[in-house]
Length: 306
Image (cartoon, one colour):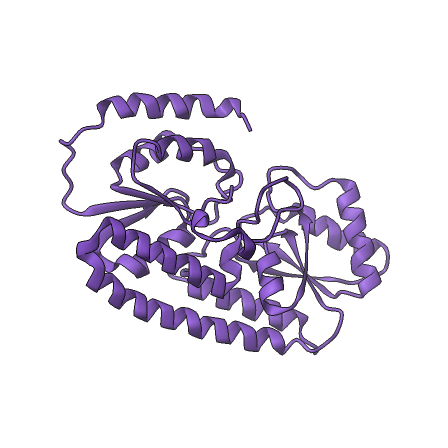
């Protein structure tokens, strides 16, 4: 895929490479991640060994994000860059791939075997990047990331292994919580409907049907036909709640609610769910573990039989 808006960032990378040198001494190892979801995981793994900075702020949609001058500064100031991969960072992909030719970069998605990934229904030869909604799969990817960081910084091994033991315990507890809570949705026919198709891994892992108004990416807006089809589906299945997302405009999903109302079917607008970004750092969804628990509670409370 070629994007004209990538020309300037790619040229800037070339110019920056020319001035990259050993004189930029730092007091602390610097890691730059693309999203705050990844930053939270990396902080749990490396602890105080490194300064971890995400490129994208809270509430930002990574599918639509374009690299800025500040982002390039963060990339070039970093000793290590870590990103999700699997085309999550849609408009930054070419920038990251070119940057990785000359600087230390870890593509987390590349560590997972294709058999564990869900194929994209929208793009040929592309996988769904939203792996963090299967807690077990996220644990596997973070274990792989931990090993890659140790390979690059073997002197951190003992410290990182200790951090990982505690983080893995939290993830295993989160996995049990998610399984138990979703299993409590006993009313048949309930479907998790969201603004875009981010919950396929969640549906597969925890045995709940999911459906999104948009596809895996938010690059294209849903059309009237998409809204009309979803309205018909909701009425046919007698669904009573659908969910907005924190990082996506609620305009389209509200149109679905209005479409149902015009046809005499009342559907509750629930959420927001946190999909491509954490919540505020001082809130319940400010960490990965907190984000998943918050989502699970919101989903179960709205889909469970009253």
